[in-house]
Amino acid sequence: MKKEKVGLALGGGGARGVAHIGVLEILEKSSIPIDMIAGTSAGAAVGAIYAQGKGTDGLKKLAKNWNWIQRAQTVDLALPHSGFIAGGRIKKLLKSIIGDVSFDDLKTPFACVATDILTGEEVVIDRGSVLEAVRASISVPVIFSIVKYGGRHLVDGGLVNPVPVSVLKAMGADFVIAVNVTPRLDRNTKAVYLNESDTKIVPKVKEPNIFSVIMKTFSITNSQLVEASLKGADVIIEPRMTGIGMADFSHAEKCITEGSTAAIDAVLEIKRRLAS
Image 1: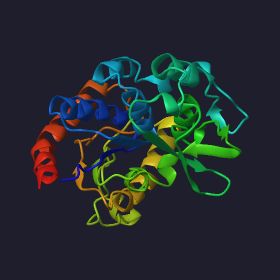
Image 2: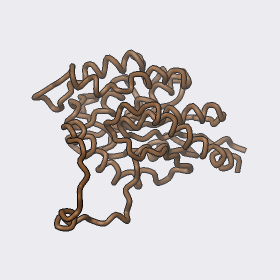
Image 3: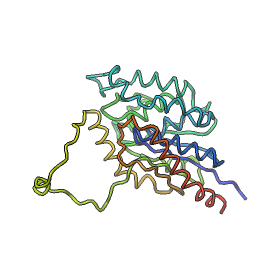
Image 4: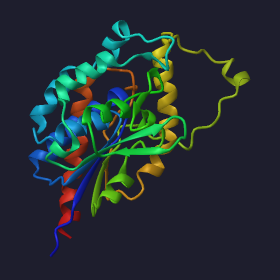
């Protein structure tokens, strides 16, 4: 019987993306074969490292440096360019973790997703510099400067394909495991009318800074697209990310644990489906 090609789609989600490390640890320990990987945004960063064949040990350095946006905010401001953060420091940090490798050097076929900010097109990158590709895929609009690559003006792939299941299908995957770290929208939530909420005591909350506002805005938009991007996945792994925002980079350990827990729950189903 022909062996099915298994693809792993790692979705975007900012700070929540570190949960992918926990998922990969469990899949590796459970001997789940991964024949190809596609990643968007944070998923692209994790996928690029894992595709080099270093195993989950190679991801530990990324986990330790997961507060990279917070650190870059203070040293890499880019006003008045196309984003608040120029991206030089981020690129340097990514290079120290990912290395300066090409897609041809990877042990596992890999692709990442970016968005052409001028045309709105989804851009799948699977050749050239892995570092440049990941830098483009993680470039949240307005926060990071755009990346000029391959004649395109690129930003975060989460704008068009937050969990790149379709990319794996195009790469030839027969069986797709999708990891979504973006909480889905509650379709039953009703609109709150201002005159109604005025009569209630609203709890005092900390005023968000501009970076948090942008990340939250991006997250809401991202959530709208998740449902569509997950279509075609054979198994969906969704770590519990309640209360963890895209900019909450201080919760790396919790995210990794939640990723592991969700993957453990999915392993039996994956093995059953692959064996059938």
